[in-house]
Image (cartoon, rainbow, N blue to C red; front, side, top):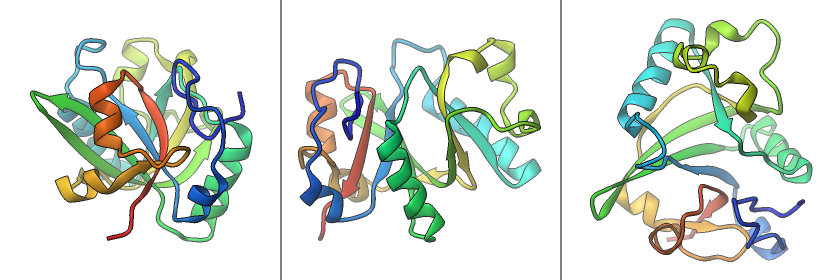
Length: 179
């Protein structure tokens, strides 16, 4: 599938070019509250530890891929020094915990000699072969509720909080609404 959004069920496979030109694209990944033993805080802490020790970290996208044409759009964006973010989201009661990390590179495979830039739990759990893409991150911080509420799915313009409340989507390319 070559759609802008490649979520699990393929619902949003058509590209809306006007939304693409409306602002920067960002990657949003939802961490399942039931599909993992780790909380979003544990995941972020493990990645922050590597950033603090080494300057950056590789974040693996478990069984999620970004279409080649969308990968190229993201690459042009961060190569042009435009802010490109990973939003990591997990439901916390009726709300969502949301973190934002700056993306400096995206790769289909973990680059050679990069193992020291990956948190140890990827190796302990033998997760490396399940990664569909890798994002090189230089920081992780909490995103504000206002920032989260401004995120829109790039293919549809639908508000991300609405989408996450009404579906089990785990991955989307998003942009920030003006205002």
